[in-house]
Amino acid sequence: MVTEGDELALVDALRADDPEALAALFDRYADRIYNHCFRATGDWADAEDATATVFLEVWRHRGRVQAHDGSALPWLYGVATNVCRNLTRSGRRRRRGLAALPPPSVEPDHAERVVDRLGSTARMQTVLAAVRELPVREQEVLGLVAWSGLSYEQAAAALDVPVGTVRSRLSRARARLSALTEE
Image (cartoon, rainbow, N blue to C red; front, side):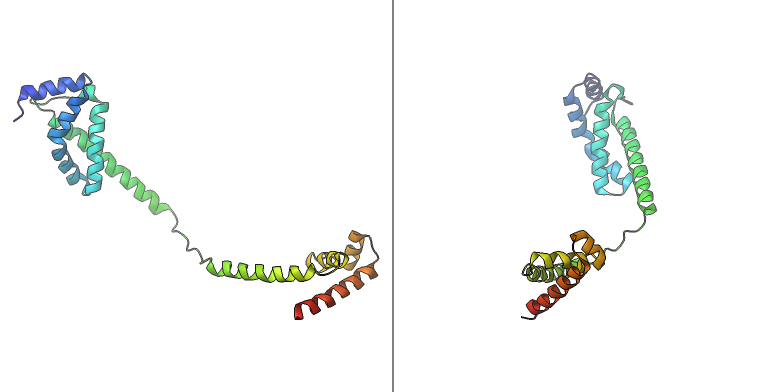
């Protein structure tokens, strides 16, 4: 049994920065503080967190520890009550904050897009392989007119050739591509 003198000596040692005194208080009262925190929070995990926080606060404020009727337990219960109150208050704030957020949007399944992109990549590789079989001049005209959307006149100006040359090169490129892709 703990005598009043032992408890007062423990409080004095704690005020004198003795970590052993904190360990002794923890060993004596952690179960009671834990049960108090559980009754205040209604959650075992929160009670564990609160108990740890209580003894952390006791160490931080060890110069203010008080013994009532020869025991530090009433002061520990006061610290525990404040810790649980703060924990409960912060939980309410967190829940209100989360409730104020818009609901998460449902993201579409990207698997179909990935499959489509892989398919289009494969098709593009096939087309590019066929285009690479064309002479460079026809590749240039095809790229400017068919893929970039330039008019014949704009492509002719870009390549510094007559408009008729652009037309004939594009015609030959289309015919060769058609023959290459039908094989």
